[in-house]
Structure formats: structure tokens, C-alpha cells
Image 1 (cartoon, chains in turn red, blue):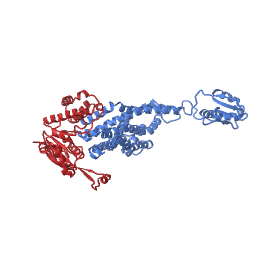
Image 2 (image 1 turned 180 degrees about the vertical axis):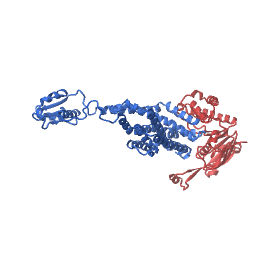
Image 3 (image 1 turned 90 degrees about the vertical axis):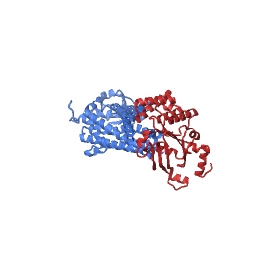
Image 4 (image 1 turned 135 degrees about the horizontal axis):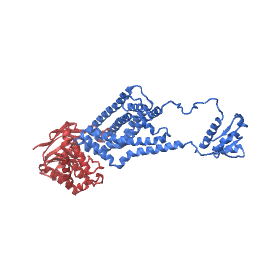
Amino acid sequence: MEEILKLENLRKTFKISRKQQRINRTSDTVKVAVDNLSFTAYRGEIFGLLGPNGAGKTTTLRMLATLIKPDGGNAYISGHSIISEEAEVRKNIGFLTSELKLEDFFTPNYLFDFFSELYDMEKSVRDARKRELFTKFGIDRFAEVKLANLSTGMKQKVSLVISIVHDPEFIIFDEPTNGLDVLTAKVVTDFLEELKAQGKTIILSTHIFSLVEKLCDRVGIIVDGRLIALDTLENITKENSLENTFFDLYDKTCGEKL
Amino acid sequence: MRNVWTIIKKEFSRFFKDKRMVFTVILPGLMIFLVYSLMGTVMENVGKTDEDYKFTAYVTEMPENLAAAFGNGFELKEYSDAEAAKADVEAGNLDLAIFFPENFGQTLSGDVKIFYNSSKDNSNNGFITVSGLLNSLINPPFTINAADGVKFDLAGEKEWTGKMLATFMPMLMFALLASGCVAVAPEAIAGEKERGTMATMLITPIKRWQLALGKILSLACFALLSGLSSFIGVILSLPKLMGGAIDGEVATFYSAGDYFMVLGLIISVVLVIISAFSIMSTFAKSVKEAGTLISPIMIIVILLGVFAMFGSSTSTWLYVIPLMGSGLAMSAIMTFTITPLAFVLAIASNFVLAALLITAISFMFKSEKIMFNR
């Protein structure tokens, strides 16, 4: 199996303010958000990153997308280091997260063209891809409507389409179905399966168990910035449901009964 | 360079398709024109009396040889006694109460008493008119500059106008360009950071310097447009504001070369100002904070303009100081004393500083602390 993503002891810390130190009753000046994270994702799989809020999922994904730099360790996407080969990494990934917004003054059509230019795409390829994706997600009927005037679901579909304008091999989806109704959420999950069928590698970060059970090939469970379990979905759910396995692991790690 | 162009195109569509944004360009010019024209008109009329106005006056012992002179512009009133007339002057109902000494017409000596009310324009102007009239009665045995058709003030109109323009053009240039920049800089970078649209561009393969350069070049264009609109407003209202001291003929004093130099200076100055403001805008966490951070720089920029108003520099090396050199160069162009070296130094120093600032912005775009810390 071809390794597409490889994390090697990835680590990220944030400074804690004096006031926050007092609240936390600690003298630590830094909080470790991601603690020596290592795992690998292979071509054509959907890798689920499961964890509670504040576990370090989004921080990990932001490092992979080269938005922020790790304090230690490294990660490679298609063999390119996220630290020293940022430009190559950016060409090869798509990143969908609620944090990255689109200027709502513009129309889907304009935004698609704008981002495809930044990815240096040929005009003919761009137009064919735009037609295909806009039709698939029903954006074609709203292609010339300003984003500000679109529904939440339609905006999310546009964000999804824009994030994969350049047909990347490796795609990061951070809570892709958050805030969507069941119909739109299904369109999105169906599309993830389609991408997988095309041989794309996907990292899916979520705290929704059913989404992981439905889509993922392998799962990494992350708590407090550390990977506490990493296996195929099949193995992880062999003895118990994913939800119960997660709670058991969480109890063991944090020593608290939920 | 293609990415830079892509960013410029995007900024232009953002700006020109938004009616409100375009309005920020046109509005300052329009406001300046209206306010300055109004100010000029008001200033022109303040303290003036209508030409066909007749001053009202109470006069005692009117000399016969003066009666004709008083006949035209004055309306003589009768009062029962002097005190009643003075009381009316005080109340503003009568412009003047004039008391001539006896036989003034023959002797032209003694003390003429003119009671007036300086708080009333008409009364005040009446006093000036009568004083002038009386003074003209005495013919001194000599004349000054009596010859017709001789130009006694030897200052050329060109030099005089140039000197006047030199005092306010640098200040005007800095103030108008800075106000143009302040209208666009906070929104374009801090606004994009705040809305989360900047990060979306940062994960694409575009290089940070390309993003910075694309932004700066388009913002410079908007600021130039806004500055130009204000400039047109000033120029159109100038004849009214200066009471006709400056008119269209001024434009012909300067050669095409002068205009090119002014244009070059303006472009280089706007690049420096917009880059400096953009640094603050990149640093700020919100549009509001960007506005606050930009204000001190705005004041420095305008002060540099004020400095150039007073300083006519003898040292060419002062032109090396960015912005300040441009103020001096602008003054020198206006007074026709610019040297090629001074011009090149002034303009080059701006371009160098702008390039450094744009590089700094590129580095700031790379810093997660600046771009993502809230």
C-alpha cells in the first residue's frame, strides 16, 4: 500500500497566559495541543480522526494544511514535508473546514475561477470540472448568485467544491457535515465515497461516530493531543460498538468515568 | 506574476462591483468640492456690503463741497439731536453719525467725529468709506506709481503662483493620498483576516509575496483614484476658494515633464503609504484595530507634508528620506527648481522603502502568530 500521509512525532504547543495558568492551577507556560502524533494513511482510504472537542484534531489538520507550523516532528504528504516543502504540499491537498471562509460578495462561478487560477489550472480543464461539480451539487442553478444570498447548505456545498477545485490527491475534511440538514449531509457523505472510489485519500475529522462507521476504513482516536487507538474500523468495532469502545478508551486514558 | 495578476483582478472586481466601495472614491472629491466652494463663497461675502447699498448717515455741518460726494452712496437721515442719532448707531438702525467741525469745507482742519458700530458690517464699511473719502481730499505734493501701463511689481506671475503652490501642494498630496489609503487598507487585509477569507487563499500554492504585491498594487490604484477624486475636488473649488487668485492659466506654467514628475512622485508616495498602512492592517486582528493602528502613521505622513511646506532644502541628500524627499521634490517642481538628481533620489527612495515594506508583509503573511492569533 502506498503511503500518502505520514506523521512522525508531530507536536504543537500553545502558550498559556498568566490568567489562564491561574484558572488551570498550573505553572506550565505551554499547553501541548498535539503530542508526538504518528500515523500513516494509505492511498485510496478514508482515515477517520475521532476525538472530543479540544483533542487536537483541528490543530493537527491545520499543520497538515501548512497553515501553522509544528514545534516538533514532521509530516509528509505524497513524500513532501509540510515544513520544508510547503508549496508542493499546498498543490497536493484540499482542505475543507469551517474556519476557511469564502468572500460572500462573490458568486460560486467567480470563486471557482479565482481559485482554479491560483492552482494554475488550464481553462478547458477548469471549465469541464466546474460543469461537472456544479451539476453534481446543484450549484449550477445558483452559479451567479452572491454567496451571501445562498442557504447554509448551498454555501457548504460551494465551500466543498472550491476546496477540491484542483482535483487533489489528498483531501482533509474537518467536520464536513456540521450544521447541514440530513439531505445535504447525505450528498456530502456520498461524495466522500465517490472520491474514495476514485482513489483519493481522505482524512475525515469528526466527533460523529455514525459518520466514521459509515465511511472510514481506519480510525485514529485522539484524546488530549495523543493517539490512544489506531486500527481498522473492523478491528476496533470487533468486540463493541465504536461509541462504547471510544468511551472505554477515554475512561482508561483520562481516568474519569463518563 | 500570473498569481499577482489574479489577485489584482479579484481585488478590482471586489472594489468596482461594490457600489458602496466605489462611492468611497467619489464621495471625498465631491465633499471637498462642495465644502470648499461653500467656504470660498462665504468667505468672499463675509464683511462685505452690497454694491448698491446706501449707507444711512446723520451728518451735521455738512461741507458744501462734500455734499455731492455724499449724495450717491449715502442716505442722509434727520435726527432731533446728536444723542438720538448715536443711540441709533449703537442699536444698529443707523450706520453712521458724522459731526464736521465748523467751516470744514474751507479749512480742511479740525477733528471730524464719526460714530460707527464695528459689530455691524455696513456701519464698519461706511466708516472705512468716509475715512477714505476724507483722506482723498488732501492732495499730497507727490505721487507714487502714477504712470499707466507700467508693471511695477516685478515678480513674474509664474514665479509667484509657483511659490504659492509649493507651500500647499506637498501637504495636499500627502493628506489626500493618505486619506485615500486609509479608506481601503483596513478592509482589504484586516477585513479578510477577520472574515477568514485570507486563510482560504493561504492554503493555495500562491506565494506570500505574490499575494502581498497583488494586494498592494490594487490598493494603491484605489487610493490613487480616491486621491485623484479629492484632487479634482480641490482643483475645481480652488478658483472660488482663492477668490480668483489662481485660475486655469496656472496649468500652462508647467511643462509635460513637470507633470510626469508629479505623477511619478504621486505613484511612489502612494505605494509607500499604502504599504505602511497595510503592515498595520496585516498586524491588526480586526478592521477596527487596523483603523486605530493606522492613525498614528497617518499623522506622521501628514506632518511630513507640513514639513515640506516650510523646508526648502539646499541639501540634495535630504531627498533620500522617503516621503519627506517627495514633499521637498514636489515643492521644487512647483517652483521650477527641481534637479534631476533630487527627483531620482526622491522617487527611488520611495520605491526602495515600498519594496522593503511589501517584503515585510510577505513575511507577516507567513507568521501564524500574526495571521491566526485572535
